Image 1: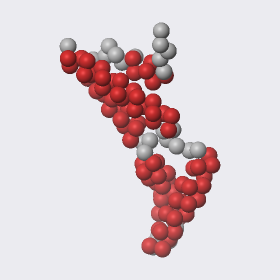
Image 2: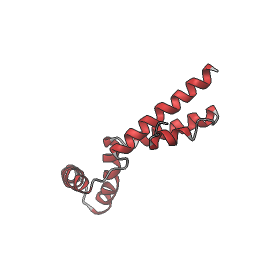
Image 3: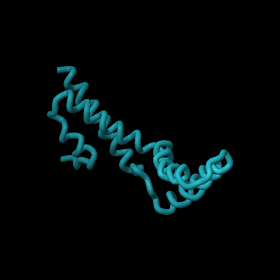
Length: 113
């Protein structure tokens, strides 16, 4: 018997679920996949930094650009890479893609019957 991967096991938990639950589960996994994008990760990491900037720094265009550049080079390029900080890792992204494909296949099979 073929050994199932972690993502296949997780997807097969929903095999006998209703179509509504399958669609909601697919939506939830697509939502997770969205938060795995680097652009979203960058904006979410910039948000607390920007809040501190607005509260404690004299605001003008120069300090805004400087704050964004410091965030990008110091936090985004250096700290994030060294500590490997990501909301969704690359391995988890692959698992999420695989789960979504399996769940969509379940919906197609249900519609045929």
